[in-house]
Length: 284
Image (cartoon, rainbow, N blue to C red; front, side, top):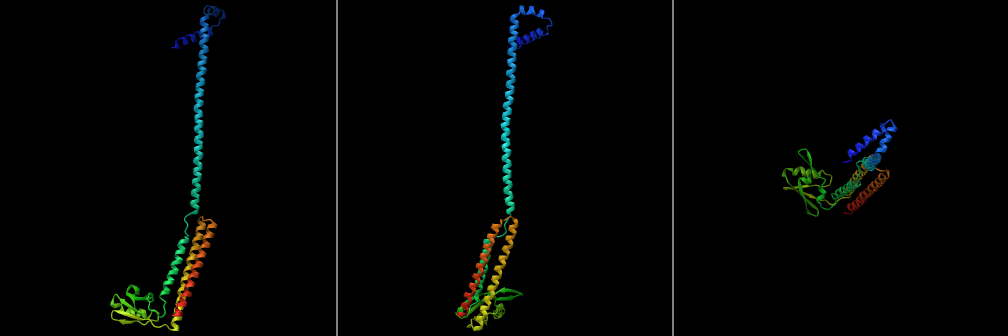
């Protein structure tokens, strides 16, 4: 809408500026004062418009730059967060890697100690003097087709009376082999074939037999103690591996002390069980 007047005024201003004679221009000024005033007014308006437009453009760029700056700060913060997160993740992974997979298990070690002691006590049940007890024949091994098989897998042992055991055989053809195995088991027993079974009288224990039983009990106890010591040694080896894998020295030391305490406890329990068994054997 204002393009035509503005173009006209710009053209007029150009003509006035290009005029080389002030005198020539003077009559035009006197003749067209309204035109000159209008020209000056439009020039001022145009200058104001240009300034406003330039300011708006600058402001717009500044605003965008500001938003970009905020965005930059936000991105920088995100980058910092990512870096911190990565650092934390790195620390976590480092801790896991340093700790590694631990091989020592205190509960498992105690369980093995306990199983060893229980086996010793079961062995003691077979060492009875003067009383019929099926457990007496648990150590007996019978040779069958070149292999040694436990008697309990080939027959059922029951109590006939206080002084006699009965061995009921599953396969009659094995009677002689079972009888021989019982006699040679070192239990001071003399079995007697009885139809499809084997009768085992339990003799009144002699002093020599009692002494042999106590020696047998002592031997079994030493074997159990040796196993307990070996289990402890294996545990110490596992602890050394765990220390190299990243376990702290303090934790390693504490576990070593606990393992030693358990070892000493079960060694003492085995010795106490032997004392009790020896007293029982010598009393009957």
